Picture 1: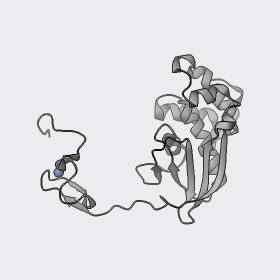
Picture 2: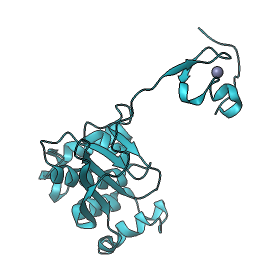
Picture 3: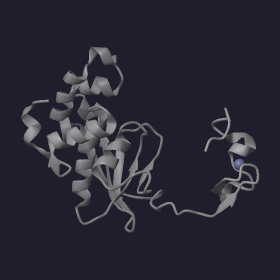
Length: 200
Ligand SMILES: [Zn+2]
């Protein structure tokens, strides 16, 4: 997509490259992820290059991918934690100092960009606001619709350590010992049931 901002640098890379990364990772240039890229960019700038920051993201939608793409934090390595509040906000922090910066989509500021505001508040059906129309607005807005603040972490700052494991007497699989004798699935709290024979 051609636009006058394509020369700019975000998250330490040319914008065009960032947008390509988003598309390759997420399947398309999701507006929430593009906005998230600016949020990560600002938070990274505030915390500084010398801190290897951990992250908390306050929604499961889109935003975790921005952190996973543009910081070393992933769900898998445990540096990214997600709280399921559906708030468009993230915090990058120094886990030893427990201090960091929270960046969020500021609804008041977003009012200056009505298309962005209406998209975010889910006030327009997707067909009426195609990506070609919305993306340039998000690129033009960038940080202008965000706010940021220094924060002190009061929770979630510890990295999750792997704890002890038990072997389930029913299925023979290993699972977190804190759940007791039998695994959740064999206790009846599973999310799937067997269909067909064991393969392999
Ligand atoms: Zn079991």
